[in-house]
Amino acid sequence: MTRLAQWSVAAKLTLGLVAVFVLAAFLLVVAAYTSLHDRTFSPRQFDSLSWRQGDVRMRGEMTASLQRQALLRNKSRDEVLALLGKPDEDREYQLRYQVDVGRRIAWSRFCEILIVTLDEKHNVDRVERVD
Image 1 (spheres, rainbow, N blue to C red):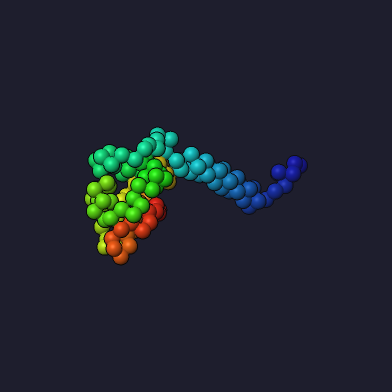
Image 2: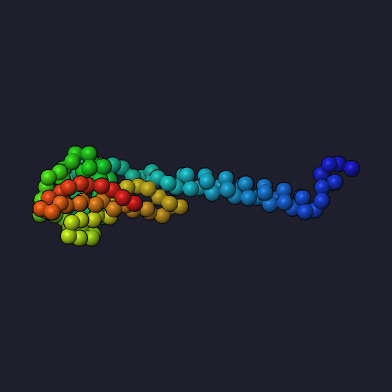
């Protein structure tokens, strides 16, 4: 009698379930990994007109350039609004813009928020991206 034939039905079932679980976990990891970044995302230089007229994707493609160039440093609230246009959310000391920086979760867009924080004189204190 072979060793496998000696195993109980419960042991065989357990082994089968473990194999299915391992395979499913592997496939899930591969699917998640390949869908984390949108390969069509293309960073571009910041352009005020394109930002104001663009959608969340266009803004997302310019976000790194905007932050790297520090274009908002020491700008007033009015100057920021002239450059970036109306925010998606306007708070007294924060202007919030939704941006798509090319991240995906299970093939769904995962947007971040570009937050322009203003000081008590309504000048730019910091610019950061949060998810």
